[in-house]
Amino acid sequence: MNTDVYYNDNLNIQSKSSQRCMATKNHPIYWITGQSGAGKTTLAYALQKKIGGIVLDGDEMRASISLGDGFSRKAREAHNLRVARLAHILSQQTKVIISVIAPFRSTRAKVSELIDPVWIYVAKTLPKSVRRPYEIPRKPNITVNSDTQTLTDKVRIILEYIHRNK
Image (cartoon, rainbow, N blue to C red; front, side, top):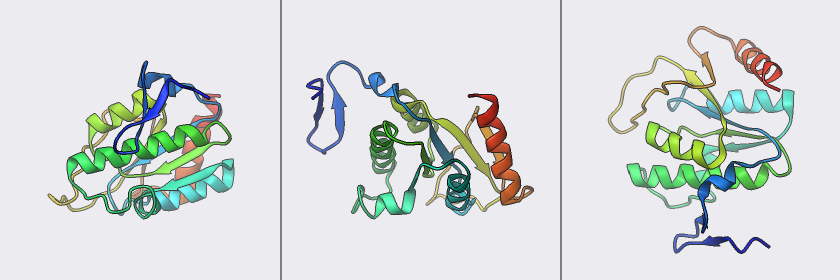
């Protein structure tokens, strides 16, 4: 048992030495980010059919490990980091595909420090909303576009990236 890891008062896993230690994983973690309604969940399950693994969907995570959390910036960050920690644990046994909005660049940077996922940005033209803020990623590993690409095209682009980066 790793005595360097403990739970803080909010039942979030913490590391006494460094959160960066979580970057070590056996299987890849793919984090699909994009605005609400961009097609993240559909893409996640289509990708899972091709590569296997487990899908962690944002709505399902909010209904389970983040039940009752709000949508403030702080609550969204806590939710994203909680999902990242769960993904780290699961990546010890299988590939992990996450379809969670992760709306803020600063939060995505913290997630990257924890688990170093492959970032997949799903672009889609949607109305801007103050209630649903989203900061477009500056340098995702992969960008697909729900306005111009079919689901098959988006999966193919991701599979090509995976093949090139084995």
